[in-house]
Image (cartoon, rainbow, N blue to C red; front, side, top):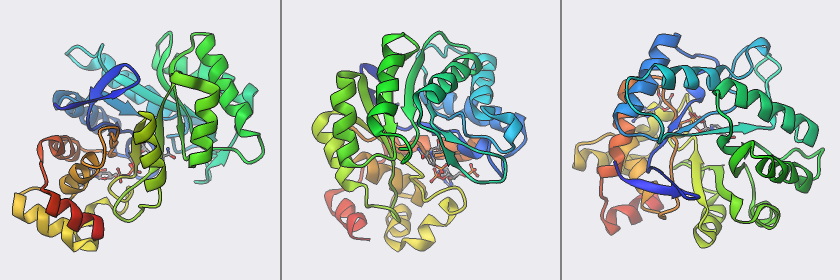
Length: 286
Ligand SMILES: NC(=O)c1ccc[n+]([C@@H]2O[C@H](COP(=O)([O-])OP(=O)(O)OC[C@H]3O[C@@H](n4cnc5c(N)ncnc54)[C@H](OP(=O)(O)O)[C@@H]3O)[C@@H](O)[C@H]2O)c1
């Protein structure tokens, strides 16, 4: 497995996104556990989760608990696995997503995540999304406090623009190690944030890299160039998409979501796919 860096942690160049295993349309638990185990078998050492990856209001942290359970039941060594979670989003249970970036809430959310993950310190804790009702510096200042208290080892931000990345960097210094933003063939407007992460040496974690849960399987039919290049290499369009992202910068670590062993195995294999400059230019223009 090819690797990349998040802070001083070495992780697989492709991570596993946990969301499809916990929100609406999720599979039964045993298939999710098998999916996490397949990811680990494939050499994946980054798992992205969040306290808000759940369906009903009374099961906050469903995905964090699932990941903890799957790691515990895996036969092999999981000490090198970085579990990256998030706080700041809530799901009241009606399918909507709400925000709370207040320091008192984030501290409480982090404590709950620590318990569910069963760790003394969270490897990477990401502020899920800016809350317009709370000054960004206050939410990010809470990550600083969590770092200082030893509750989290590294801090990340998500859904941040370039000004927010710079602001977070000022507050957190070298302890800010990652930015997680939406980026896919159908959503490319986060290129400026990717570029800034490249300049600053921050990991850039594209979310919904394949276009999102309901759209990922149709990537090749929406973007012909991805399907054609996939055919030439005898791989899936999804692998082409992930290899294209990896080629953008050494700071990119895509986190494709999966709820089936087959899909995460296929995605993990993208680390071995080399695309030519010509192919990459064609995909950029697609
Ligand atoms: N920070 C944020 O605000 C934010 C927002 C959204 C998501 N995220 C994170 O980003 C992760 C990824 O995003 P996402 O799950 O929304 O969307 P995605 O990764 O674009 O798509 C997920 C879907 O892709 C399918 N898939 C994965 N690999 C495939 C392959 N090689 N071939 C064919 N299909 C494949 C999976 O199908 P199966 O289910 O059938 O396996 C899955 O349902 C999430 O899981 C979550 O961890 C973060």
